[in-house]
Image 1 (cartoon, rainbow, N blue to C red):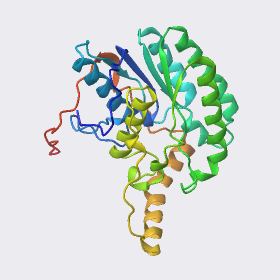
Image 2: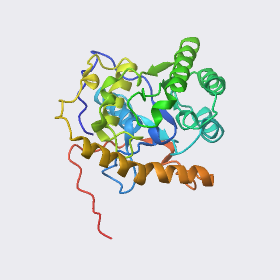
Image 3: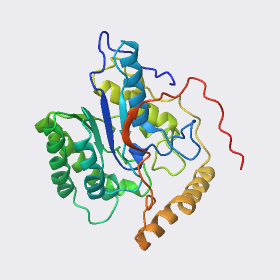
Image 4: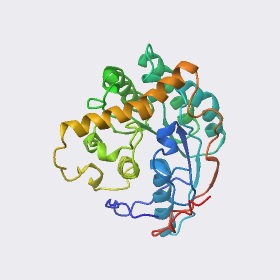
Length: 285
């Protein structure tokens, strides 16, 4: 497993033995390539599971079992219909549920309605005795086009904090993670995090769970020199052609990037951490 630049909380061993992650592309791990499997992604939830596993094993406890049911493009109702029942029956003592982001991007979606359904899910999960981990949306203030959804994201985030307070859940505060305002922590599509972005979210999740005392995840990258305006405009135009237009095309056709896809880790299984120096992927045909 790649080392995480966080300070372990002294004498704290993860008590969870089975972790199940629910969600969409964010939790599936796009766009954080998995060095072990060409075409698959790792992501913050996998990184979190690996860190929990390593900490448990180092203390002599049994390793962590982990399932990741997230599928890219899933709306909240799909997550609740397809993934929630599996989590409820899994015997998990830690469940992360992060969904609704794809809904918020769609015109006419009411974040108040989303929150009602999310709270029902959290109530059910807490009823099994599992600890629940949620996450706020990232502040889209500097995101082209998506910044128009900022009010809806903020409203939904407020509900998430209130739900957590009422049901004893925990919240990964992505809105407050200002380091994520740096586009170098994002993939070319400006929707999904890069490997470094996912690493920082995993570190923040560990901190949220009370397992680290450091705040290295929030340290901003070194400033980069200003870019020529023409280069910025060219990149924006390429982004619209390469990512926005295909996304709009799928919306108009009623299609999703996750159509036909299934979960990458559908059942709880022992974690296999990524080695410190994984062998390079063989990308030959």
